[in-house]
Length: 195
Image (cartoon, rainbow, N blue to C red; front, side, top):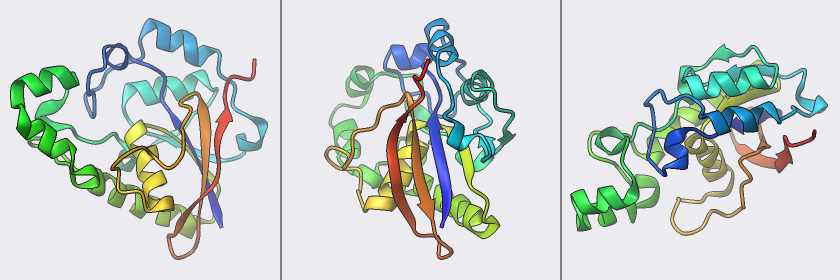
């Protein structure tokens, strides 16, 4: 089994405003920078091979943790298409029942001109299978959508209803992947708030 440690980037202004940011390159907010500056990577993950989403918020978070990761395009956030930049209330106002119907589809939700969570899960699975082939424990600073994809693969959750586990976004979430590409949970919520 090869381990995969996943960390979500720190908060951005769009996170704070409850806007879907997807692949829009929104940097950390002032509060987000302050938050990640208080994070410490647990020693057990120091020797991992580190990668990060190419988006600025993930790169900034990695730098705050003292990491110099390689960019990994497979770990970019879900493409929310025409929904990016909007809040849930704004999307309900714009699309009405069409928005509600799409969001009820769970893993098969597809925003207008965007990507489904199932597609995100497939690209994460392909990347994880490559990690398994390398045999090198790997860490990644990425996005909520990527970590939810890992959780979906590990548990069979189809993203309807509450997730099968509570996720603390100031933490490392540790998964493992075997030689067949099967993802399992090792430990969730390993705190980064150690100072």
